[in-house]
Each structure stands twice: as C-alpha cells, then as structure tokens.
Image (cartoon, rainbow, N blue to C red; front, side, top):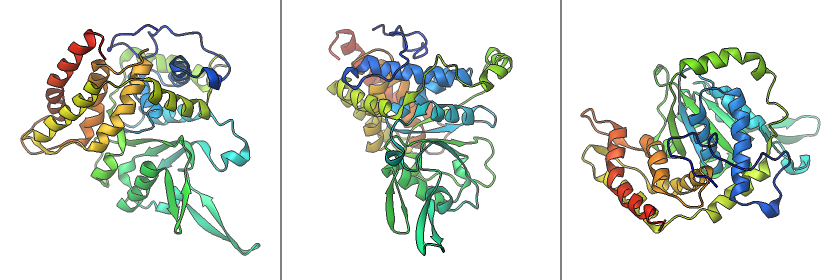
Length: 359
C-alpha cells in the first residue's frame, strides 16, 4: 500500500487495486477491501459533486466511523446533491421482508412548524380494519439529509437527538429501531440567523464532525457548468454502487484491524485536558467526543493506506471533532487557535515516536 501525504486528497492519489464490479467477498474483507469500497463511494459522489473532494472525504470518514456530520454552508453549495448521491450509491441487497420500510435517501426540510411525528412517523387508524398502523417518517433511511436543522423547534430537535444517539425512535410509547447504517447529514446556514433555534449542546455533541464549507474555486465552478449534461445522466455504469452490508462489514474490519497505540489515546486525553484548562474556554470537549474520535482516526488511517493511527490523522481530524464542542468566553479568541495550541505538544510527542516505527 502507498501512504499519501497528509495534505493530498484521500483516494485520488492512493495507489489501490483496480475497482471491482462485484461486491467484495466476505471471506476476503480486509483493509484493502475497505479501501476499495470507499473508493467506489468516493468516485460515485465525486462524479456528481465537483470541487468538494475534501468535504467528500470527511463525509465518507464519518460514514465508515458510524458518526453523523454537520455542514455549515451557503445555499446552493451542493449539499443536497452530495447527500442524495451518497444515498443512491448505497444499495440494500436484503430481501424486502428484511429491509422493511428503509429507504436509500430521504430529505427533511426543517421548519418552525414541523412536528416530531413529521420526522419520526405516526400511528394511523385504519377504519376498514379497525386497527392502528404505523406510518414511518423520513428518518427510516440509510442516509438522511436534515436540511437547516436549526430552524425547527427544540421538541423536534430532541426527537432527532434520540434517533442520532440511539438509532431508534419512540412513537406512542413504542420504540422502533432504525437501520444499522443510519447516517445523518445536517446543514445550517452560518449567516441567516432569523427564526432559528441554536442547536443544544447535547445535540451538537452527537455530530462527529462540523465542517464549514466555502465557495468552490473558479476552475471547479467552470467544471460544474461544463459537466451539467454528464451529471444529469447519473453515475456511469463503470462506477458500481456499494452494498449496505459492505459498509457495515467495513466498519467492523476497521475497528478490528487498525491499531491505536496507547500514545494516541494519551494524546487525545492530554489535548482534551489542555482545552478544558484553557482560561478562554467556558466549556471543553466531552469524553464522548474522545470515544467518537477513535473510529474516525482509524477510518482515516485506512483511507490513507495504513493499519495504524498516526499523528497525521490526529492533526487532520481533531479540529473538525473538537471545534464545535468548545465554547469560548468573551475576549475575541478563536476556537481554531485554541484547539491547534492544545494539539501542538501531544502531536509532537506522538510524531517523534511514529518516526521510530513504534506506533
């Protein structure tokens, strides 16, 4: 395997085995197979979303790490296309009976008048049979786009919190399980704050990453305009989809086969402690964030062709993991600067050991 530099795009520059047109066999499902699955997903999404390679990489990282993602973006930046393409690239090979009511992709447009039942589902009385039937809401999907999630009421946000945290919904005192693959891509507009409800800290803590998106560069915008017909035609046949089971097996393989050295764990705790002890910080990062960070770091190591977590993975991901969890006091401090300062010492320590091949 060839390990690319930390600043290079994840899958574009990594030399991997040729893409397979058939699902990877269960008995051969190692880290190479995980990377091949990620490559297929990356190619499918990139064919529809241009100029967002870094965002696509982080979205796939969250997907394979079994986390959710919050995008802070501007209208018309391609978030719906990204989420829809990702959902359509994942096929469910189970029988109809096993799959139940699960869809590939659903979009929820959050508004102030939205009710929890509009999202989770509701029980309907059938007069012909005299029975109640559950009508599932849009959260019963593999990939859910929660558009402008901060525009809905705290009651709906609390219902979403249960779905994101427990992969289940409770309707009429009955709990129903969501799919194991359940993955939320939520968005919020950073400028339009009128009529919004700030996300509670508990819900922010459920997002693995928060990504601030900016406008794409000139060349990418030209590429968007020139490729309109090609993108409307959908993904080429040469880009096969990925099965739900492949992603779930990849999650288990990454957890089992990507090593996390004790020094990496110590670095995570030391960075978190430094952030909490900073005088400028009102609220530091939670222990949950450290737990969620581990599979994300393992996933990034796999994406870059390694079977161990290194200081490069910490440097690349922790700003996205910690940034939205840190609350600062008055004084004009920048969250990014606080996190980077806290990372400096522990990362240097880990990097020295990594160079000796001990991690």
